[in-house]
Length: 79
Image (cartoon, rainbow, N blue to C red; front, side):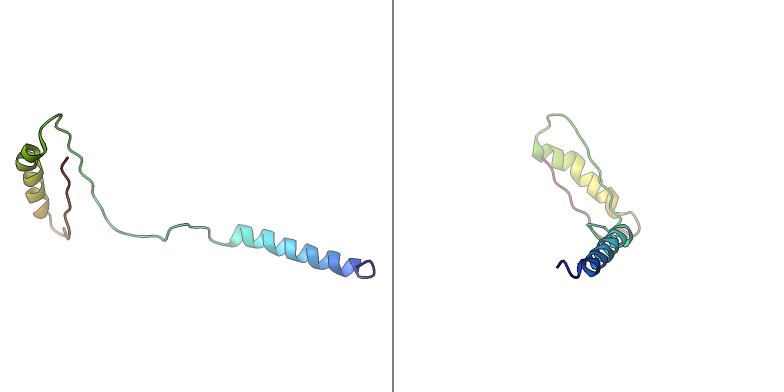
């Protein structure tokens, strides 16, 4: 190692420089880009029982959302 210290130092410097270059130029996205249009509607009606909430609020809102052009899927939960 002592005889080739300049070569080892050169290669170490090149590897470190390549690492710094890659760190600044590589993409670092965790999740892929998606284009899923999504609308979330939250309705709070106090302490109404779930079955009554379903009949008076959830179902009418679902029916109104089904009439929107381009709607593909509607999911709802009532609690």
